[in-house]
Image (cartoon, rainbow, N blue to C red):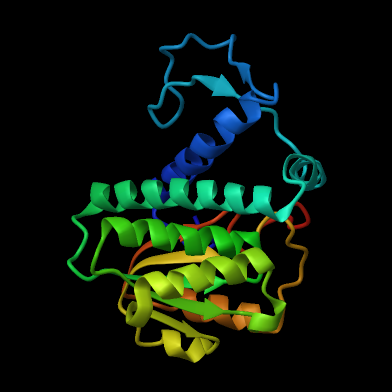
Length: 231
């Protein structure tokens, strides 16, 4: 679920991760409605039962909803932790559908500066709890001074958790020889407006040229996709 032929079951599991987080959250606020038009046993296109449906919203509507639902940094941090945990669970299961996890797996994260990046970092922490030999490389597209405070906090927590198994770099060229089990795109999401900044374009190109990648996954929308993008 990147612009470059991402693993097909990854799309299903990204949906599962986001649905597991958003479903109860929206229902508590009266935003979710049962899909009365479909019998509960009716499968969707992927063979999954349709239990509920949620309205489609524009990016502006989603941002307005988030501002109302997450009014302070504490509520934002809670949402990031929940989202990251859901993504970790989905990625862990998705990889196992393909093959067993290696003893010392490696995750490469394309890191933005906002909450998508924070979700990705928390997901790495959740996977590390399941996979003791996990190593993580964060390739940061922005300097630390530009990071959202929540992102800075969760990276600090991951540094304490992984210690020498965590490597942070801003060099896209360092991707050229990586052996990667999961490549996680946490760069940009629904706020993307074209064109891509040159440094992000170079990072995406380097990531897309990697040949030794197991599963490619994205937090929120894959970088480069948004309402302002025609195709």
